[in-house]
Image 1 (cartoon, each protein chain N blue to C red):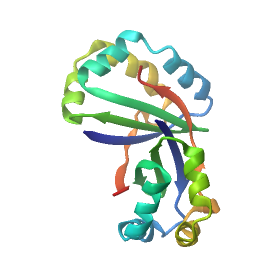
Image 2 (image 1 turned 90 degrees about the vertical axis):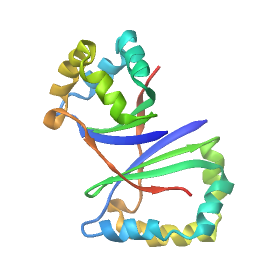
Image 3 (image 1 turned 45 degrees about the vertical axis):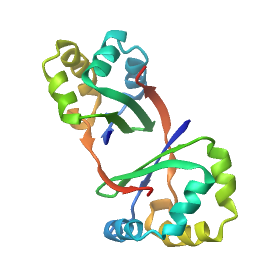
Length: 98
Length: 98
């Protein structure tokens, strides 16, 4: 299993909107993510700081699968304007409990 | 299973030292964490930003178990000065893929 973590900063005032959007994420989009190979996806927040934690078998396959999805494009069009820089950024794994 | 996420900011210049400390974390401390009930612990980093992701059965039991450990106290004495504010802060879970 592959694990990936990302972070993002919410633009000022977008906190409630971001949480609300995810509360109302279309059921079909969740199903699309699962079908693309995402096994687990958690988002954590503190103020304007966001952390996304993802588990999947093959992250490249997930990205390739989602790339051509209009549903995913619509979702990104909704979410991107809430994020500083428009997207989340990958974190580097530096420790795993042996 | 319980999942918890924390974040911290490294003090300026402490990045290499923090990574190196975790690379050399005493084997016995890892065993102590497992014995305390931690099933998975991952740390991710980007610049001075740290993201800690934890899986366990019962986070209160883990904390109670570690509270009286001199080994854990020694570890915190080493790590705390590297962190802005001396400790990591809990994040709020705002989304989980259904």
